[in-house]
Image (tube, rainbow, N blue to C red; front, top):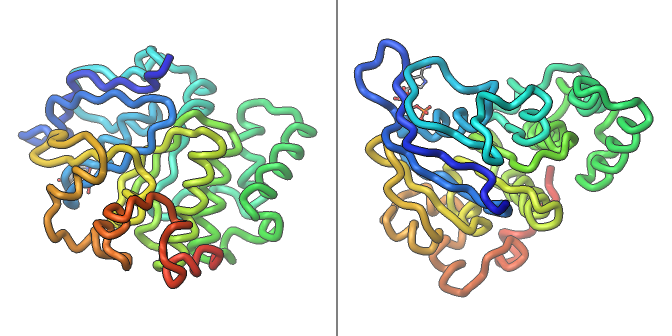
Length: 272
Ligand code: ADP
């Protein structure tokens, strides 16, 4: 089945609020999509992402349905949920629960009853893939913001989810670590075939990787289509210009990947 997520007529109101924060949301996410959700602060991006992860669905009044692999999200078992949808939070500090990186990677696997030899094998394989080997024994508290966010991504990837949701994952990272983080995401998407949905304010680089952009305005999705079209609706929004060159130039030149960016921008990719 190509359709991984279906949102059907979702309307949601937080407790004690008069107005819904999301209204009549309809969306189908296909296997292999890389979707960037754009919208002003407070437009509902986080609330929408949280409705796609069973454990994070906020309390409030909901109508409509969210289906994951054709099943209502609330009927997913804990195991199913953990192995289908991963979530990387905005603030890298809030995610880790263990003391060291290796413990942080082992914990989700222990939680789903993975045997210890398999845990070791998966950690070795993934840390090698992400270039995290040197960090495995480090204390979480000693990591830089970029290293921490990479460790957070790894602790999600270790369960091999079909979808990864990321809520402004680079909002607390500097431009160079942001570049590196997105390069990793590009590989995860292209090489591992994982579907990615992220909200982001460093839009230009995120959009250069995405095949779809959603724009949330007035509590609903007002645009769902190619980023090249979506950015036209954003005018001179400064979030598009966070990186040089402006995204329009990247797209006009038909370039879609970090490797295609000029050396001065791409040079920071390895700086974590
Ligand atoms: P974004 O991610 O686009 O910044 P959010 O989904 O965080 O937007 O928030 C959308 C709106 O919902 C905002 O007006 C915010 O103040 C409100 N909101 C977020 N969380 C809660 C909550 N737990 N209770 C009440 N209102 C909330």
